[in-house]
Image (cartoon, rainbow, N blue to C red; front, top):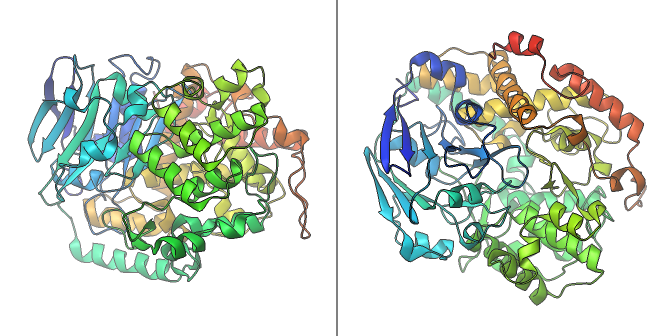
Length: 580
């Protein structure tokens, strides 16, 4: 086959055995790769507890991974999420997906539980388990220090070993499979790291046609201000969004009690660029290069981290944000959930935090010390334990990212209905409401947002199956990537075919969540957003959400998504999508 290798590696940690699966071509045409394939394997065991040895931890690349197709060096990591109990997945960058493909594997399915802490090593077709007890408690950089330049790693840190419910998996030192606690699933299997070296080539059906498709995507990206403009993501990383969100008065501040941060101008991406003399880096096969690295090797935070470790927690120290990001990467924690949980605590306790206290709390969480034991359960469980559930800014127990939903009502609907919990990436209506791409919409209305959210969820599910970077879709569309897919694999799928596949993958996640007890009751937002006004000013009025309008929009979403009034999948829609 071209694009795919035709082989999936199964690793059973209990039995210490490997098995090679070679699915038929029809399997690849149905599930494509990445999110689609991972969802297939999770669906078979979706109701198992996240720490059941039979629960699979899934690493899947896509048919475009490892090819010259632009920004295709990503992969999906998936399991049931410990923090939420819902579907847990992450599209993660770095080089792991590319190296796994070049090693000859379309995916890795990890099951079982090792008797002792273990590493899993893949070098092309050679596979082995290695004792990792000497790395127990080790931080990420120590585990990865022996990896060569031709090797990619997926590592858990002390946070996962210590039971933090939002522990992440760190790829190549600073790319994070971050949300929902996938690192804890890995820890439950006694798996400390996965190391991959791949030297093979990926077959391409029509290299000349791929080159033409690639040039089309490059041209579109070059014309995008959001990607390649002087203030865009290519220049400043995702931190380019910091000033934009602040100017729109939708920056989550003081645990979402305000939407404007008085010190934003001192904490924006320009300040990091100046202070740390940053240079651009990025994932394998990417020309956008959205990562920012300091002159002394510092990892400059992504936008969500930059925003939450400043405005959300009331911190005005730039170095403390960088240190907080470093601690989370080294110990393996999701920065969004970590910052949000600390912000929740800060509201409940009614106290400000010095930079030293902020970073100290992060270390206490990672190492399960003192108050950190409670905070490691996430903001929802922490707030409930303190009798203040309303202080947790979460959906389905997943903490909210750095876009206040009162300032973008499509995002409000997307947060509520996301299969992952409070996720900005399932639909990302910010593209329409703030970046004005591909079609500008009024951010202060729910009108038309149900269909926008549904279509975006389907598109992004397809993108995560190819796999590609969603940033490119500020400029390109599924039409260009359908052309690239055909050039790589020989499989002819239209943009509409890809969108339909994405719909099937997303609906399968609603089925999995329904099997685990999720209903319309869970497709909701914290009360704060319906009762409290944001930080109005400069001609912008940030009003509380209208609950009746929200419920009408949610009902519209259920209708276009093919769910019943309880938010549950229907037999009719399953039959329409060919889901058994």
